[in-house]
Image (cartoon, rainbow, N blue to C red; front, side, top):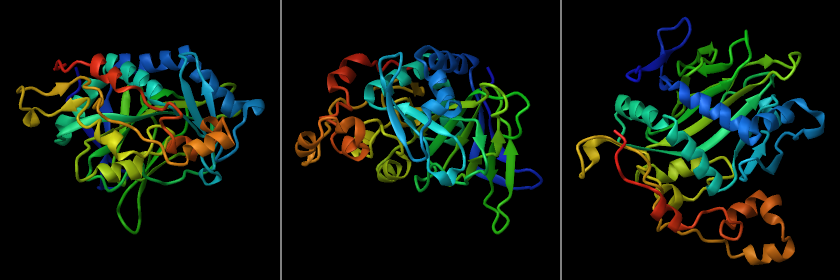
Length: 336
């Protein structure tokens, strides 16, 4: 199995390496399972309808909550106009959908990917904590940005290509740190090759236009992983939690630490790496804002219509699973 190498990006025509951007080999069953999952629950069709159907159009900076074929509520959003694209993000809207997504990853080889990343980068422990699908068919100009910063080089967004367009121009821009030039490299996604983007790894969706090809779009999964610790937990929470779930709750993220992979050097109970699923700490307890009862009286449907209030009232809006789910559902038996 070709797990042993993470490839550091070297930008085109420069002897310059971007220290927080990598490629990693993925098991083929992982990409197959993710594709099958998207088709089975109707997410692929939903994504295609958002970008190709005038009837199902989402305005820039808009969102929808939709229940898919798995019975879970999903959050579909379109970024602001400055992105100059029809990109949409679709992610679980609560912890039940989040856990179902994690189960799929766990059962189809993602733990092995974490083992490679943890070993090669000398990381202490890892958890997959924010899960999203992204779709695009048209981009006028790439919006350069980074997904994470100031986490001590301990957080990465893992991009997993699922559906691409044949003979597409380059799909991803990676920007270097070589001031004042800021060299840009452009690349195409490859089947069963994941992209890791860490702290201050500047990148963008490259210009594309597939609209003349019926049904053509690009679909990818994005899995945020982190080695959360006392020094970075607040930064990871503040700087990377951009979706409707997880909310920006430091206690929730802290309850996930070391959940999916632990370096053998930091285990007192065994001399091998742990790769499995410990679940989150079942003692975590969410609390609602003091204004939740009043908001409920004003608008009984605010959990579906007001994102700010939904996040402020996680108990009333049923965002979290009961702690008993984690106390009884997960094993600490090592995978490796």
